[in-house]
Amino acid sequence: MKSRDWPAPAKLNLFLHVTGRREDGYHELQTLFQFLDYCDRLDFSSRADGRINRAANYSDVSAEDDLVVRAARALQENSGCSQGADIRVEKHLPMGGGLGGGSSNAATVLVALNQVWSLGLSVEQLAEIGLGLGADVPVFIHGHAAWAEGVGERLTAVDPFEPWYLVICPDCHVSTSVVFNAEDLTRHTPAITIRDFLKSGGHNDCEPVVRKHYPEVAKALDWLSQYGRAQMTGTGACIFAGFENEKEAVSLRKKLPGKWHGFVARGRNQSPLLVRLAKEAS
Image (cartoon, rainbow, N blue to C red; front, side, top):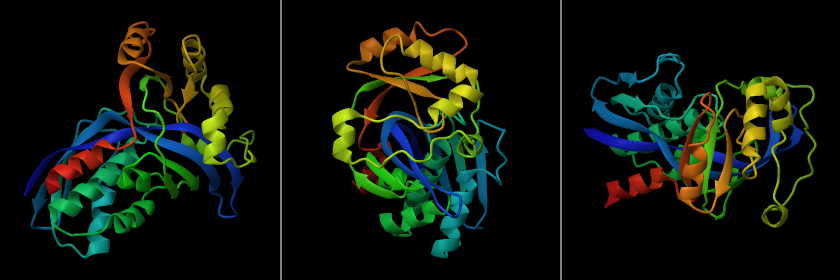
């Protein structure tokens, strides 16, 4: 069985507060995830021999380390499925940019192969498998913009405004571990409520650390701040600003300094992955 053109969308963290650190070393967070209609694309073909093969337009991540392969194998293990798959990945999201590309790929693998292999697992079962692969995977599986707490696994669906975003990708790769292990990372921001955020907004506690260690991100934030409220998503390196219409965002993208890549995308409260999944059921 072949199933083509499954999206793995980018996400933005509209804010990111670090509210504490647990005994196991993980950080307690508050954030709001919103999806973009800018996606990696995955194709799937089932195999009878149980093998998982990956073909991709990138080579700097080995197949064994790729969340695409790890997600497929986790689904096999948790479901007892003997089928395999050939998976083709067309990557558009930058790696190490804070757009959630790896987690999104993993979620799309779980959701798509649940269909391709006719497993019939529930969203909750898929999300539980996904959490074992990464804290952000469940939000991509649930597929709705969400207020997240804990390590990112406690989700409450929300419907923020869906602006057009200009996303800038500075020419650097930010290490999440470097950011969260930094001595000067703020780890005690007071918890807020959804109502608090909608009234007065939030910030990204990781931004000062990234500014200090990654000057290219600092330069991009300063440049974009001339035209709107510039924010960093996740632990970076990508930054973004929202606009009311596509024309304004596209016009600003054309002014980008040549050293930075950027794209324009619409914020989406319903993930493109859910839209694609609905086509399978129709």
